[in-house]
Length: 368
Image (tube, rainbow, N blue to C red):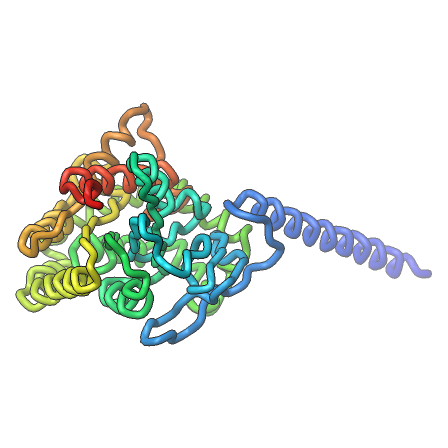
């Protein structure tokens, strides 16, 4: 064998060792990252969704178990996250239907840590008689206001609830804060560069199936968090001269939008009341609302005003989230690592506690 051949063979061996080591390192990292995510361990992600289900844009497969985008899905025969519901409503059963999006579903936390399941636990602690609370988690990732209406018509109504609780989110309706958040993320140079390299957003989304990518994404969001807040404050200050933000403000304050949002709430209330149930609403706090000293209260005040107009309780969570975060120095983390929207279990506990408080104040827990 010639000297050149020996050199090439040595290089080839080293490259092979490097490649094998890299593969082993990536596979090991993927498995470790998966083991760190909440819920049962899984080697692969499995899509839990059925497309276009009874007028809904997507819905969970019934009796599904598996991991998807960092969350463990375990659904019952109705396709709802959580245990099987009794076939017939019990005589002493107080049944609750929880409507919402990924924050109601409980993205990135285990099922017992979601606010519907914590609400069920607190209600059963509250009852001193033979009544038993059963909460149906009708939250689905990506849902918004009109989907909540359809979800109640398709699933919620047949459950014969005594109470319906609707968890709205910032992205459920036009508002300036939502537009600021979108603008902030769309101007992130690193995200734009990565999207371009992989050939578009659709290809980038495919990486969500890998836990190592999810961990890297969360790490990046965490280390750029302070800068993101600064961008948010800057965008908010520039809202008067930014065309897209002025347009968002005009849309959010337009009579057409306000009427549509009010009609959405009225429709949900009518559907609940026609089914023999009371209804309550709340807005999930968003990260800047919890941690920034100055924030836009317009979305909160708007939803509260609608609830007052239609005589439905609005559960205000903002101040409680802010108080709890500031019980420690530096402020306590209230949201999932690297995530600006989905609360940690403590945040969902706050949701459940404050829903119970409002129900108690209304006297709805005292009824037979």
